[in-house]
Each structure stands twice: as structure tokens, then as C-alpha cells.
Length: 344
Image (cartoon, rainbow, N blue to C red):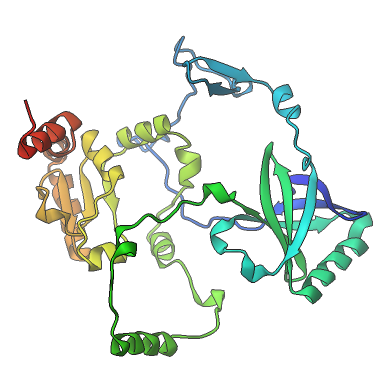
């Protein structure tokens, strides 16, 4: 592993020099965008929207758009002058029971390794945390961003768990929370019995990504989506450079026949790209068969792929037509207003 950050853990009069390592890694199989005709890899260029010229990475800066529309270009010196007291320091604020920290706050995990001359104070803090059965609540700045975090012990190593700030956690404003739902004792007892029957210890080694394993067995390769499409413009280019969309839906959407339909799929349709997606009940409200194909099982997926390949251009035209008829804002809003009796 390669250290991504160096600093010190500070609590009381003690300072422990440490190195920071990313604790997790994604194991998704990687897909590449390629030219349909010859299989050549697709490359993207960073182009300035004003002069149309390609921009070298070294010439790219961060910019903040003001309410007036003016963009302020920020320099490394601007970020260096930010008043971050936690810069290069893991500043211990307090020690709290782990069960008091809601997991919704956790963002990313990092390992802390002591520098050669700091092993003893590192072990002292580690053992003290274990004895107290607590975690340290800390502040730390990584790559100019200050974050709240916890320090806990895992397999003899201090683990830094960065957290989102309290105002970054959304409130679940769902209508059903105000409904008066009555659950009969018999129903509750049945649910508790089911939970009891499936209860056990968490053994992460018992689980694996069946989807990834199946793809690898068939020679598929997945890429990190955030690296492939870091922004909306890249995502648009990615969709337009694709031949079609194939996707499966979450089991709960299929089982409940919810009608769920991805906005990503809409983007493919709008780009004139056929889509082959698992049916969640949307086929009851949208035209399927050309451009938009729905499947319920593996045989249906194979048949859909064969239909698209047999007449690709027809399905491309049909996909665009579906987007215009059912997702174009001018068309859809006008129809809603007319049905509501308030159209012109």
C-alpha cells in the first residue's frame, strides 16, 4: 500500500506521527468504451468551452461561480491560506461510545500506521481505546477538506473513519411516517420469528459479489464509474458513445412491480440508444418492444439483445421517439396542463 497523507495524531500533550492509507478498494470488473468498428479505446480531451482549445492538466485550476455568474479562479496559495487548524493533524476532540455514533455518518475508512519513532505512543493509544471500549472523535483535514472522523481499533490497527457533517444528512420526509398503520400482534410475532430464524454472527467472508464473479467468468471487465465519468459532460459523452444500455433493477423494485424507471435510461433513450432493462412494471405505462425492451428473466434478456442486434437502426430511432413522446418536458408538461384543464 502507498501512503496518501502524513501527519500526526494529537491528544493532550502527546503527538503521534502517522501515515494514512486507504483501507478499502473496489473490486468491480472494468469495462472500457471502445469504437464499435475496430475495438479501439475511446479517449476524452479536456477542452475549454470559451476558446475550444485542449487544456493541459497542469493548466487546470479550481473555479467558483458567484451568484452574479462571474467565475473566481482559485490558486494553490488560496487553499494554503485557509484557516484549517486540523491541517496535517488528527486532532482528538473527545472519546465517545461507538454505539452512540450512527453509521449513517461514516464516509470512508483509512488505516493509520505509526512512523518508526512513534510505535510506543501509537500502541498506548490503541490499547487505551480498546480498554475503554470507546472511539476517539477527531477533526482532520485531507486534501484541503476538513472532516469530522472517528478513531477506532481494528485488527491491532487504528482506523480513521471520516464522517459527513450533521447538516449533510438528509431528513427522511416520507408520507408514510404520518400514516396511522396498525400491526397486529400475530403479524409482529411472525416477523420476529423470521428474524430469529435468520439471526447469526456477521461473517463477511461468507459473502461475495455474484454479479462480478459471473462477469469475470464470461470475460467481462468493469471500470470505476467515477473515474470514467467524473462529471455531467463526460457522462453525456459516455452515453452518446455507447451502443445501448443493458441493466438490471434492484430486487425490491421488481418484486413489488413498482414501475421504477431510471433517469439514466431516459438519457440513453434521448440519445437515440436502445435500452434493454429489467421490467419493474414500467411496461404497463410505456411502449416496449422497439427502442425500449423489457425482460423478466435471462431468456427474455437474451431475446431482447438479439432483437436489437438484428435491426439496430430501427431500435435507435424508436428509442429517440419514445424519449420525445414520454420524457420531453415541453410535450409532457403541456399534456399534464391540458389534462388538468389549465392549458392554453
